[in-house]
Picture 1: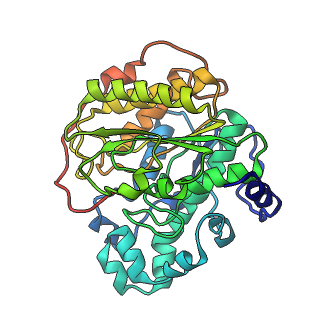
Picture 2: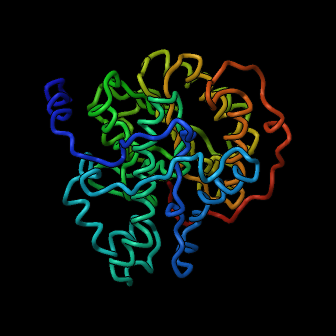
Length: 367
């Protein structure tokens, strides 16, 4: 995009509720109970735990890290918000239940009237998308932010797939470019087990966005066209384990940030890398996931770069506990909170977590 186009975008920004002021008494952790998808058990037809986001919040409350009063309540992205990235034609296609059934990989949805699909499936995804956009602004203001949902990295401006109906990562970055002074370069660190072909297609010709993507090269989506957008591509083999994985995370996260020097980091922290995940095909332990997130946040804080984290894929029931443990570890390490400070080593959480049993074999694709 040219500087002229960028300036025109700034002048024509629409009115949105997603950038409303948030009280300083709130932690920059974004969530809404509407994130969770429950409708006559249909959500169980996809391996994705469609209630994992609420479980993460439950665990964080149990540990007395958050309360209902000190987190940010996400707002649903409106059609005007979505049109910042999405084409009108694509949004109209989502009014057909068969299209949504294909994107979410829940075939029985095609038999339901679209008003039910909108209310029970797409509204939760629009609310998570709104949460990612809100968290982008919060990250710039506070130095860090976590959307407990989001990370729909297979969706681009004109097509969805892999349970991703809205391009929340692209939207968050475009909103920042259009509306926040001083934000002109972004780095996406995508550590979900799957290639993030949605944001890659959206930013293919945009030199302002540096993409690091580390994924299992043998699984969905295998999008060769989108790979052209990846500036630092790290392809993993089946069954990659903690030692090799964490070395690569540190090496390539540091290298990406040294090379790109961004104004904002968007960290897609998928937990489908977990050993036993039915879709990811990697063998990372719970401790490895917690350490991975710590490495990325430490790299951001060392450089004083704002970081936005989204939770993306993760298909086992124990995923929610691991996400919560990781957030607690980031706090204990001083990497999130009122002030992030440089610390050494890992908290006891990293070394004390137990690896539980895996899940069933793959049938679907991914977030």
